[in-house]
Image (cartoon, rainbow, N blue to C red; front, side):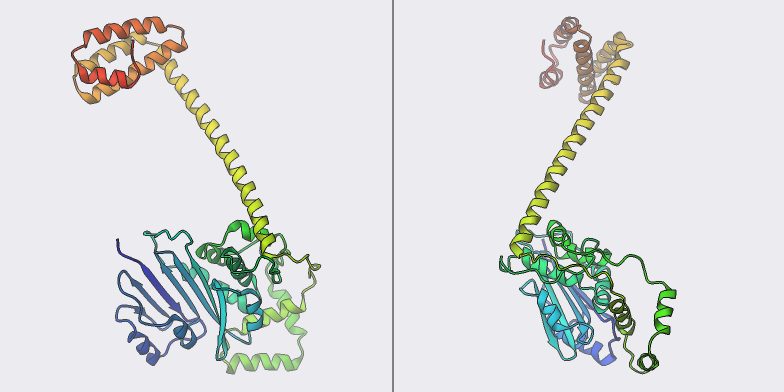
Length: 383
């Protein structure tokens, strides 16, 4: 079977120029290139470009997927929105790293399938679109993605056992759709996320209303308003909204939790193992309850079927005779199943001797039908 590699790059803050698109076309004649994206799929060969270089020069997000288990996600943000030192607290291994390029900070998240199992039903289309909203969250001060990155490093045993956990952002226990997509794409252990979420305060409830924002804006100093309006008109800063929302939240933060006891990577892994064992125990108990329920339902249905058969047993025996007389294998199968039903009915009603006598007679009459006799023996219908 052929290999599968999927490359997707996208811009968010600005479109690609004609010259930039031409430069990208020189890297691939097959790629789908637009003013905001570069997408290519390989079933043989390799991409000529360097994803790191492309992120530094052109793009704000990149997703790579290969069917031998490699998965990669890169995000680029301006340094004035995301402090590289803050990112470095969380990105501490091969699975999560960070570097700066000019005015930008670039996060590289990476996962390799530890079992090395090939995946043949992959399709990368649409994955980056489901993930890209996390970039706006980072710009607005939501650091949950960074904590997921640190957990990915912990899971990959790239963090020392006694390494303390970095600050836990609020809302880690209630991941939105985009963060959930990241966790699934990078195959981060849900039990490890749950273990970390135990040290996370609840996210701020509810969306900001227009009234709340109007009140806040009305109270801003005139000089700040002048600066904001000037930036809006002249700078083309696509993150202006994110910066303002971050400022609003910072100014209205009143629910800062008490400092939690520092947890280490080892403690989180141990907690995750306990949560996994408990979840597996509950799952096993639920499977057993489901099995018992299915068996009871099947037994009740079987009794109803035998009740119907008991209404006219002579007709059932006559049907067996007619089916055997056709000398057709398929009809033999139907006859044998009907005999099984008659046997079970006889057992239930305490009339097994009568059934055995009739079965002996049937075997004698049809002793020259080896195909029928083989089916009777295989089904356990012996005298």
